[in-house]
Image 1: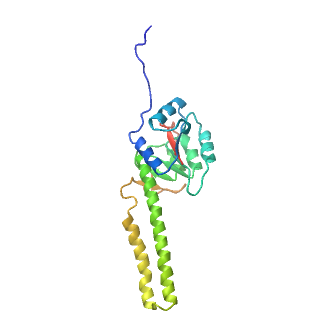
Image 2: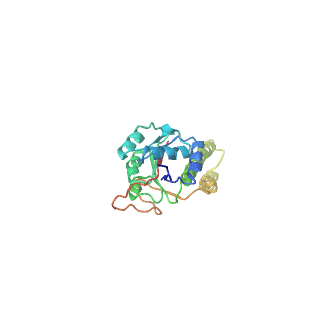
Length: 226
């Protein structure tokens, strides 16, 4: 006989996925895929997204994901971030340094995540990373300014170079300067809307966790970022 036709089924890759992952790599992140899908499916997706085959693992159980996340070395400057949207990702998200849930994900992930993205797409994850880094930069800048300002002010006051009235005027000026500096920074001005919440505490804009029957895990492979 002759082959009349060949039918192939595959999970489509989001159009913004490759760009978002490239941005994360530029930020110095090491990215991998942990998925319960068939290894061949994961391998195909990994090829399209530019992953090294060794960084894409398929056929994993929830316990496997937890073990991999827990065994990944962490440090203050190298946290482990797990991004997921399925029931099978919840335990690994809870085990990671930071768990990120995405919109339209299973309800079980809401109770496990530290950050919930209110818009679809991985591009907003890259925006969140950039915005968070800018925020820490602003915090460090404000702290250094406050320390220097108060050190100089205290020295002048102790030596008698300035009087009590001048010191009383200069003190609130420091706080006002820090507030203005933070306001003008606009660290998330062009980034996606994201809500952060600690485990067990719901932010005003994030959907509250609900008790429901577990839904099947999403078919899309989930990245685990480090």
